Length: 202
Image 1 (cartoon, helix red, strand yellow):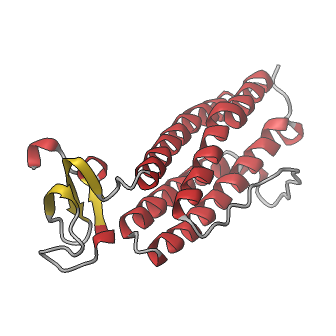
Image 2 (cartoon, rainbow, N blue to C red; image 1 turned 30 degrees about the vertical axis):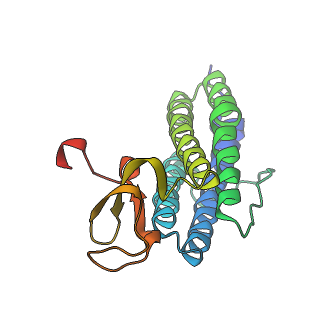
């Protein structure tokens, strides 16, 4: 028999998840500003892209609380403080947070929701956990490329796309300035990470 939702752990966990996703969105928006200050415009855009997906996650969890409108839900939770001057460090912190949600937090919330009889909430936790894993792996790849100084360079040759005008540069490194629109190198992104670009279009 299902637990009374107003007295359930799932109700609190949904609010914890809403709060966590909301904070993640703000952390990534702040990280995007740091990336822009470091002239890493394309990484700034990836942070903002991810931040908007966190907003969507927050909305999913918030909608599942619709029956609690005008109620105040008291929760106890811990949330990370990730402040760093180095974008690579911000990416590594993001990896930790995303993988923690994927491996620990949301699977536990899903299990509790299932036990309490809230299958829709359980499913939401499970599905969003899988997305957080994608976020974590993407941030990990970016941190690795930056850490190895391979985000704009590849000794074996590569391709980069300017996020401003779409110019594709082939060679061992992205140019200091886009030869087409004259935007800074920071607007370039490795082609394999470029949005909406399919191999057959190159």
